[in-house]
Amino acid sequence: MKTTTAKSARKPGRPRVNLLPRAEQVRVAKQAQRQRDRAAGLALCQVKLRKDVAERLRQAVAIPGFDAELEKFLGEAVVEVDKYPNLKLIAWNRVDSLLTARDAFGLYERNWKFVDTKNMGAAERELIRRLTETWGHGVMNV
Image (cartoon, rainbow, N blue to C red; front, side):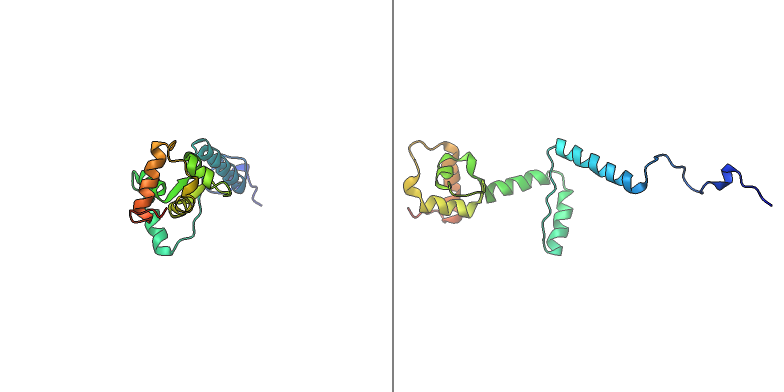
C-alpha cells in the first residue's frame, strides 16, 4: 500500500500566493480600481451606440489627445447653464444644469426680453454669438 506524503497531496500548478478565493480577489481588485478612478476624477459612462460607431469610438479612445478633442466637441454641443448668469435666469425652471446648444439658443431667442445685455459678460456674449452662427445661421429673431 502506498502512503501519500504532504508533497504529493498538493495540486499541481502554480503555488497559491493569496489565501482568498479567486472571486474574492477579483472583487477586492475591482474595488481598489474604482477607488483609484474616483481619486483621479474618472467616471464610468455607458452609452448605447450602433456597433460600427461603438467600434470606432473604442479605437479613437486609444489615440493620444482624444479626450481633449472630445471635450472641445462637448463644449460646443452642451452648455453649462451655471456659467452664464442670463442663461441661468431664463432657465430657472430647468432641473438639469446642462443644455444642448440648440436648446440654449432657443431659450435666448424666446426670452430675449429678460436678458440683461448691459451687464452681460464677454463669455456669455461669445456664447450667444457662437449659438447664433451655428443654430440661427447668423440671425437671432428677437
